[in-house]
Image (tube, rainbow, N blue to C red; front, side, top):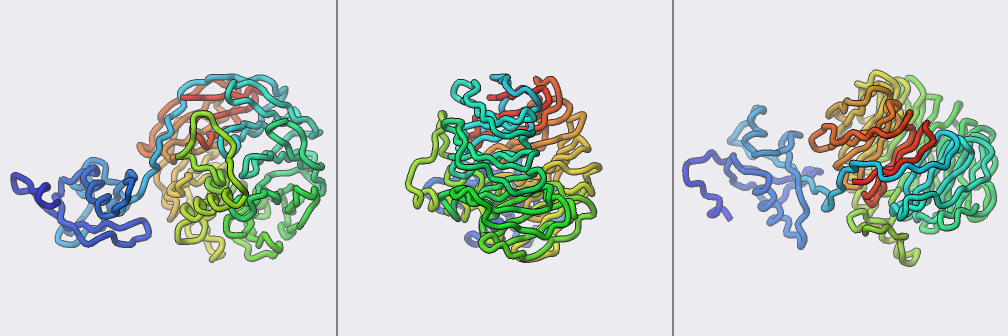
Length: 482
């Protein structure tokens, strides 16, 4: 190997040591020319990893990515060349999602604003909830309306797909929760009633914990969280402790539930018995939004976006097989440490927590100049994106919460964001009536998508990478493709 790299003239050489993201060394220190490129590093590193199918890698020195050559990356840093340099390697997604570039359909049907849009875990179905009290299902093969689900008597504020893709839950301003079958558009079971004020958020139990997708958690303005047994159609547990509206609920992959509230706290509950484990304090105003580092893998369950086909299908296999697949995917994303939680608030800040272990935050993330609407970990957990009323989207390091960059281009509030399954692209919807696709690698605007006639409230990127859907004040649902 070394012989093939011998330079013809005298080139400065360095000793490097490959390490993974956790800091574990790979092989022993290695002598390379300072002009080595990422492609050559890739060859060396893959030879040491000895994998059957080498995956693409990115290389970093002191948090700076090696893009052109090691020399260029070292140029801006004070480096002692006689010491061994640690080069961190990061496996990248083996598949690429291409940016959406055009609107292929503008779907009319809703008679009031579209408040939420969500693709099912495999990207086979698309659902939307609206101020017209209906939930609509859309046929993605023809991009036409499929079913209109009627039952709610007030605005549909929140929708959530079960991780097996077989049920959609919807919650309304009338404090009722309905379950729907996407294959028929019919209601499943009975209406789940019990909350005394409107439903703010819905979240299903993860597939690897229960492949039947039986339990659903709901958060409400009444200050409580309820866990529903959707099979029996009744409330299983009521979690009380928040003193004001609960804004968001997340069901983690390790048996914990997380809830954020306008009482400025986040509470961590044990899902099996509803016991309060700890309360996370630090925000100075309402906590609006939360994200888990494992959100994407929990959302997609047993579905692996890298194996997506052109025409999305439901997942096939026995419950045990699906549970197993979901567990493997979860374990891989979760990695060594417990899942991380990031919270966003009306106090303009974000906090990064390790809620299973500590009630003190890892990092307080400041920089936004207005309240935060949404926060999301990238599917590979490496980047946190936050959308704000200050018209910007900010990117942060997913492990440490360190500020990376601001994505500027929207001329009004950014409401909702969604990552592509390969973590390389991000789409945002804004009150300026546009969607924008951003490149997370170059940290620049990739594509501007005008087309809506008014504010864009909701946006989602299908897990199979094929489509982006958006909806808002103009009552139209738009589907965007590459």
